[in-house]
Length: 256
Image 1 (cartoon, one colour):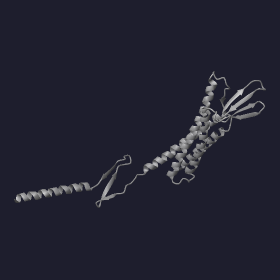
Image 2 (cartoon, rainbow, N blue to C red):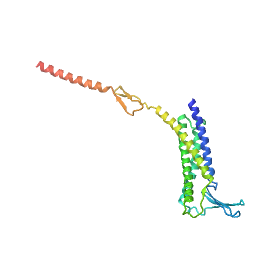
Image 3 (spheres, rainbow, N blue to C red):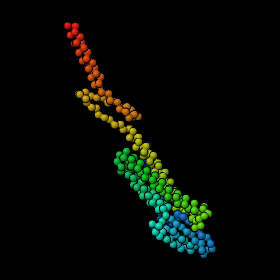
Image 4 (cartoon, helix red, strand yellow):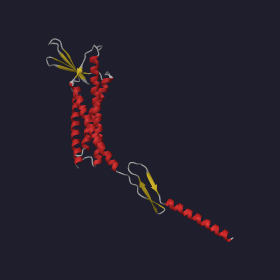
């Protein structure tokens, strides 16, 4: 009972951690602070440049800002399409992971039996892991591109640094991965232990009016030994009939 209570509180803690991580990942999508660059000149011409998956923004020292969406979706690079797809997958899988966790947690009692709840929680942990991995790959690819272009002396275009959204996304992805890993471990352990306790039992069958006994080896072996008691009896009866026929032929010869 104490173990079940511990697992229940652990599931609640993992759900809260994954929910916070998913919210952090979602908050980074509309913000323009994925990449940051500052053009420092005289006071009048100082400007800040921001960009994210969807738009480029410009803010000057007077507080005025303007954002422009990318002109054509078909003209975007493969890198930007990949980052968009991974970010959207992270949000969608994180949502379904939360739904599955609410169904499979022990405190909600929605999934049904203990084994069914553990199975649903295991699926939720896998879904959270996928969400965290998608988010981590997205932010890592974006950060690697910015760092590579910033360190490359041959790049003459505007150079960007890492924005605040990248670090927020990394934190949310780590929370999703850790929470999903803990959920997967404990729920998978419970499912495996419950399945190992179950042993299939085969009913006894009747051959020629007599019972055939079935002996099963321990759970570590998958072999099954069938020992029908009729084999020895049939063999003994055939030996007896052969001996009787031999005795009758000997008696006939002696008589002659």
